[in-house]
Figure 1 (cartoon, rainbow, N blue to C red):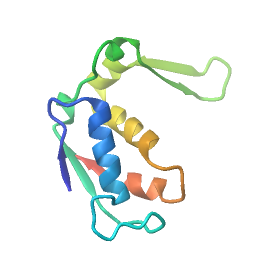
Figure 2 (cartoon, rainbow, N blue to C red):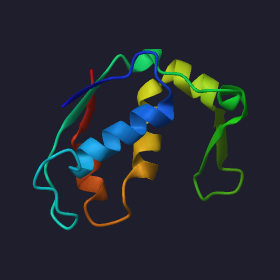
Figure 3 (cartoon, rainbow, N blue to C red):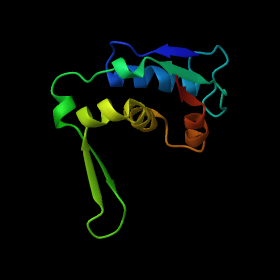
Length: 110
């Protein structure tokens, strides 16, 4: 499945991608069986945030060492690595079960 992310918000694109990866768009959808659907996202550089989220949203990561907290605003991360923003949003929208990592491996960007 190909998803065109041009001129759309991050959340709307991520929810569409998550439903394709889960397999809810297929006729024989069953929650406990992984469908094996692959998703390719195109035009990710044209995705945007709505409202003030671009300047107010902060992505944090801690290396578990003293002083190891790294923070980046959504605007900076979207400019440098837009695929990371999409990956983070899709990861949070997928169900927390044993299929989550396998589904994320089937997500690619063009």
